[in-house]
Length: 402
Ligand SMILES: Nc1nc2c(ncn2[C@@H]2O[C@H](COP(=O)(O)OP(=O)(O)OP(=O)(O)O)[C@@H](O)[C@H]2O)c(=O)[nH]1
Ligand SMILES: [Mg+2]
Image (tube, rainbow, N blue to C red):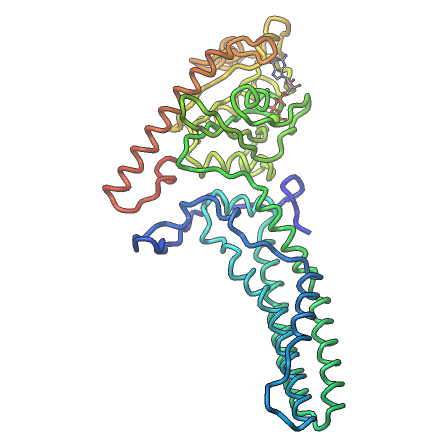
């Protein structure tokens, strides 16, 4: 079974951006395949192992001997060899289709590549595909061997027995390896359910410490309806919503909260947030909870904010002070902090921050306007970047924006 994000523990290199080039087949232009997001929606349907086996058994049993063979023994061994060959092919061809049509990691967009690593753990995806391919090879080798043995039968009876034995042997090999196919079904299911992000549509990404109110804001800003709860790490994956405004369409992603710690120490749930920030051309809506209702001290939120701002400060950006209905009612522990910067941050938040309360509907109108403006600017950036691509040849839109 695949490991899902919340339990995966492997480390990933988020800087690995190797790209594959290929022709797109329509006009012969070279395109960078890794610029395209959406490979997970194109992966083939994987049939359950029992269905593959039953279908192979049924089809192979209907294969007749070659016409015109009058000798009974010859006809029977010809039929046996052909049926075993057909069984082998019916079992192995679907497996070849899967191994050839699941995307290779190097051909994926870096964002999708990191989703694979963070969801299943390092190397698991390739391991499952490798096991399916090993099963295919084993079926081919056993099938060829059994068909050849059957073809050498001297009597009708011997041919019948060898056909029965050959079938049994092939079916057993398939059944022994079928858990690889079941694992591939789980992988395919997990990949197909991953959020679809179009890098050519402006995207707002909500970022902040855990429990600060990101998902609550996503709910009022977009069609996305992420879960909202009063404990940290309610959001454990990347969730998508959409905003449609004046016939324009924008995307909104909710992300898991970031703890105050070094990037190397982050868990895979936090790394998903960094993957979105690193690889997608997003605009940031950074959420600050100065009431400390979230459970993270203001001083710690400040540290995380400064770190993210330093790394991704070239993005279009809005700061939001959330839960402002609580601000007059609580005295955060960092109030008496010695650090002037933190004291300032505790009082006013970052410069230009909008104060919002989802609960009391304070500031939500202004926030929607600011978000619309930000995403319109993001659209202009994407268009500029595309036209630069047109002038300069095929450089990566995503890279330039990130
Ligand atoms: N008083 C008040 N509470 C709020 C407001 N916005 C959100 N909350 C509460 O804060 C808690 C966390 O809200 P979420 O929207 O789940 O926060 P999050 O940042 O998505 O949390 P994680 O996904 O766990 O990182 C919930 O109990 C919300 O009801 C607000 O404007 N005022
Ligand atoms: Mg959330």
